[in-house]
Length: 385
Picture 1 (tube, rainbow, N blue to C red):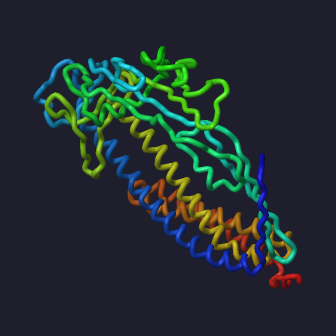
Picture 2: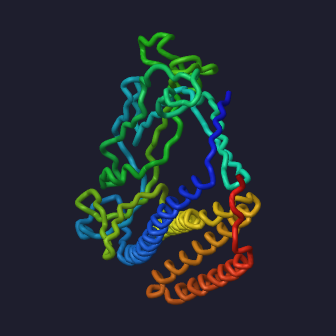
Picture 3: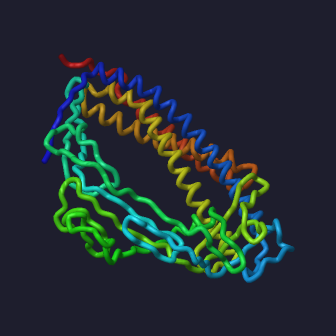
């Protein structure tokens, strides 16, 4: 099932859109620069904080509460335990565990669209958008009234909602875990529901491999729902936090960063710090990549006017667009390296200087590409009538 829509825009219209795109591109450049600077500032703070906690943390036993460690950053490990019951009263579930979660889904029509653009002689552009429809399980009801093609109606409302039940008291030896630590116990395993509550009728739903279905599991219809469950069972944990009585509170470093850490497994203090360093490294490189990508799109929007002007002859516009994209990429990488280098140069001079050297190399490549571009014809043929 598919629905196709074709739209066209003329050369002058594309020029107008490109001029507006320059403004958006400038905004994206500012956003990317701020993002990169803040990320490097955060990276420096993370390194200092992780070094600080590695020097200050004291490893202690969880078997007893030692008042001498009150207010100190401590590390301990052992089995987390609870006597609490987690429940879902609607389905009659009651288990001794850390957390019970349930995920509700509804069977709906879903619209997908795919657009293809084709340049026309004279600078215009034609866009062909194809809308396709499929039935699938989704987390929330889909509003089918906004679909491009009628006949794919999603009827009814969602009766079941996702949620969770969490233990209130979880202990580690003689200590009580705070809510912030319990919430970090995020592992789980599928929980197969064995039977429906007494009094439920067949038309109310049925079970298939431990999952509840309001309709037929093998042949669902629009509006049918399903609910699956997962259980977080007690396990060995390692905690690093400030000892506060027989519980824990958040540690605040000299940089202002806070730490309230729980890892699954019997880890040493060194392994917990290494875990924090790994997470911080992944985050900062992800944000660096995001900053470069945002900057790249910004430069693409700024330079797009050049390819639009040249699109009176599609092959020429494609050539200019390709060169512009390469220049945008090189500029984004080079400027990002400069921003990162300046941020690091006082903290790690060798790294900062190395990054500046790489940036200079990218600027040299950009100069070469621009020199090649300047050898292209200066004038652009007028649009054909």
